[in-house]
Image (cartoon, rainbow, N blue to C red; front, side, top):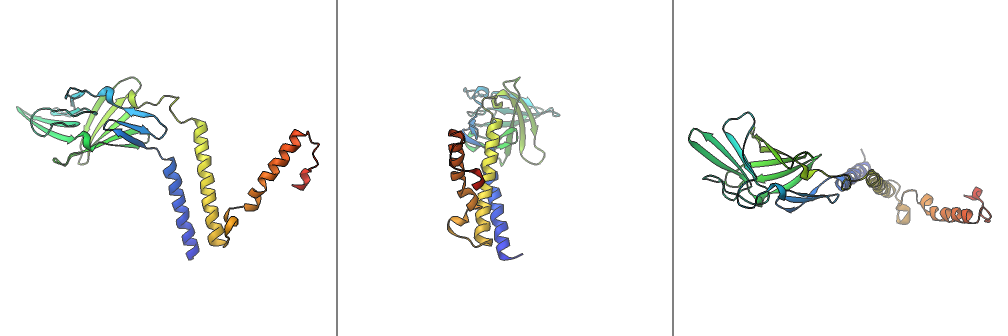
Length: 244
């Protein structure tokens, strides 16, 4: 492959990456328990968060376990038991007879959001225990909040929460028309970038001729003017379309 072709491929890949990044979903963090989606919808978990230093979800048993419980409070820290669960967002307790072992899985200071399809993930890490955890927030119009701890299988501790607080209603979702416009704008952007690269690298053009199909696009304003005049004057204009 020639150097010019390699450069063209590299620039094309960069252009594709830029288009993908423009259209990718994201959630800009506003607080430890809220973020703003790219379409303007705000995820706010304050309705499922206590303010009295107790967890909203308290001692929820992990499915399949009889001695592993989890507590979670998104917006403000809570303290539970003795040990490392002091002013935390997420805590796990393991019970073995009369012995209870508490482990912090992260605090509000380490909270960060990401989007994975229809699921919003809330990430935590604890510097002291080394624990990494992720709370998966999924839409359920029928509940304010239910928690289903999954525990850890050698990786991050995972907690599933179903809540209507992450459900976007029809007015806040991106409309079909908006999606079409975003897609069209992305195609136009890619067309211009790739066209300029081809004109510059392959055809050695410069100036206005870097614009792909410059002759065609430069004639568009004149053709539009002729069309408008023809329509306004009911075809009585002196212009003839066989000249176009």
